[in-house]
Amino acid sequence: MSGRRGIDPVVRKETFRVGAIAYAGIALMLLVFFLLHTFCPKEVWDVPFDYTVILGGVCCGIIDILNFFLMGLAVVKVTSLEPVLDEEGKPSDEDTSRARKIMSASMKLRFLIMIVWCILAIVLPCFNAIAGILPLVFPTLGIKVLGLAKKVD
Image 1 (tube, rainbow, N blue to C red):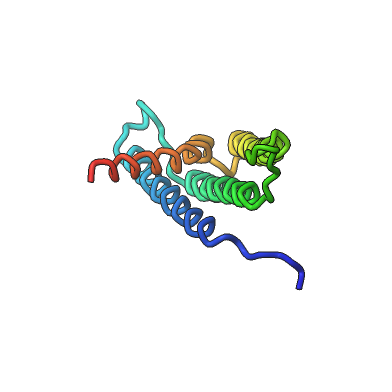
Image 2: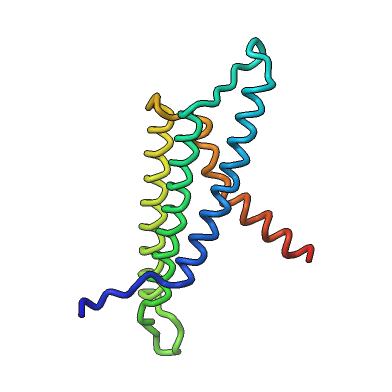
């Protein structure tokens, strides 16, 4: 046995949820692009609706999902660390430092992935830059909207 564990069920479930939120936002974005392309006069604003818009949105959705998945893996790793307690039974500075280092490394990696993606979405002609970058905010917005909806209930 290799000692590898499967993906935590909570990480799997929440990653799927974030993916659904991201792609719901992307579908809405594509609808807005389509409506603007169809009804906005070309002299005012020539809004494209072609494969670059769709490809940018779909690829950015993958980045959204990857970002959340990697964050979830880091959280599971931190919470599964064996605690190092001081004489009073509280988490030691070493324990807190280990957890901080893991989360910091995860955040830096995820931020780097998003920056590289943004550069690619802007530079490569196969992506519409707006459609390739805008969906990065959809999971955060969706989670906040769902949180507000739960408070109203």
